[in-house]
Length: 328
Ligand code: GLV
Image (cartoon, rainbow, N blue to C red; front, side, top):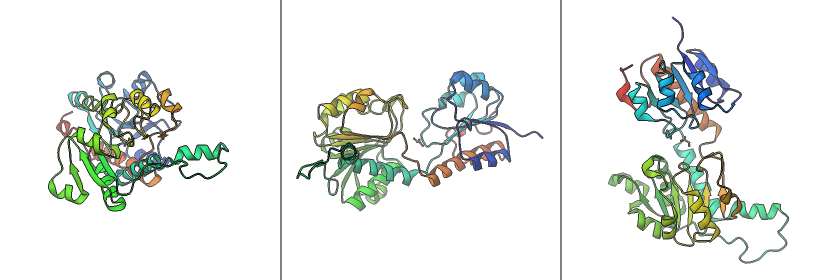
């Protein structure tokens, strides 16, 4: 019997490709060339499976052009690159890569919070530019972290990891806002108190965004929300571009309406709003929150396990639209 055909849409560990080749005919993009949607379709139209990252948009147009497709396995926990409703309508299974990146991503969220509050990259640029001539009592004075109030918007697994770090490691008072409230035991374990979004914006010293992107969460933070924040507060976005209105944020940073921001994700990335590149009080990183080699291996393994699990054994590990199982 011939092997199912799959497309690996971005460069990935050679070991992952070798493992997939044991089960599938694999076409892969190991050169990591950027494909247009038309190029993606040309490669995907005779495939039964796709190994995707957050960069490949799988929508109704792609699905209509790829009638043999049965599964798209994302090497990412976020899956806003998938039109899951359209996938379900076409009988295509969607899977993501949850859990394996939770602690690594929470570490990074906390690192970005610390770098932002304590002005680490701003002061490093100053030093590298040869501007450090003398010590002064208020040089790069930042915001207090230990004992301050941490506000988390989006209290899934990663948000909970950040809450634990803040409460247990840094003596922070943790407040959170989420679509639904955690159960009492989990709230107690995370030492987190549920509040409304407005109270969180008004009272937190540091705000971390970990909410998934959807049309409903588009611009969760815009000019109106920034205006509610304390002028001494910091904002960290490790969620997705589009959760923050980047133009409004750049204006708030420029006018010092908030103290600083740390951003790992951007609207329209890899492009970055030009105004963010000109304000000093922002720490910018290129969407690397889950980027450690062990974690990226675990994410790649889980995406591969989903493809093998479904196309070979009929049992995916982390289906997002299980309604299609047994369908196509
Ligand atoms: C990264 O952004 C992910 O969703 O895994």
